[in-house]
Amino acid sequence: MASIDFDRALSTILSEDDPLRVRFERWRRFLLREVTFSHSESVCHTTEHVERVLLFALLLGRELEVPSEDLDALALCAVFHDTRRHDDDLDVGHGDRAAAYYREYETERGRTPDDRVARIIARHDRRDEVSEEKFREEGADDETLLLYRIFKDADAIDRCRFGPKALNERYLRTSAARSLLPVLRPFVLRLTGYEA
Image 1 (cartoon, rainbow, N blue to C red):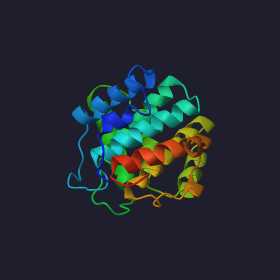
Image 2 (cartoon, rainbow, N blue to C red):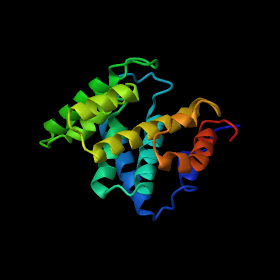
Image 3 (cartoon, rainbow, N blue to C red):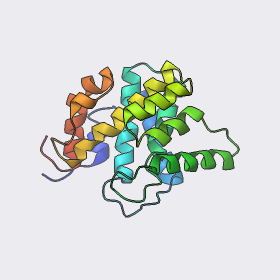
């Protein structure tokens, strides 16, 4: 099966006048205009992957009724999370490099980086037990842990780009990811050329 056009597929999930679609398109433009990737030859961690993670993070956040500013925090996590990969393997440490890039990007523009965003980006390439323990040691609130879990689920759902059995849904962290998976899995499979 050939892959289908992203915008056509997106319309099956979000109408053009849906406020979340408007937010997604704003962050998508930001991604395409402002963000650079170190591993530009990547075949797995592409701009298309980041677009889908961005979409999924926003959808999961809305489903869990996170505040508007937290939707934007999730968007920042999505657009920066894989920017400093060196390869397509595990590349533990790319989260730290991407968080540094995010902090530098914001600081150079005279803005204060959101510490929650930087910490989520930095820890997204680690096992949950390690990351969540570090968050707790730092006194992170429940809201930050929820954002971390939403983001990790958004990134995980896009594992479907590797095929119908690439995602083990038992590892999903949020109720929103589990409830939206029947819609999002076929969405990714269609976009990446797999039968849904």
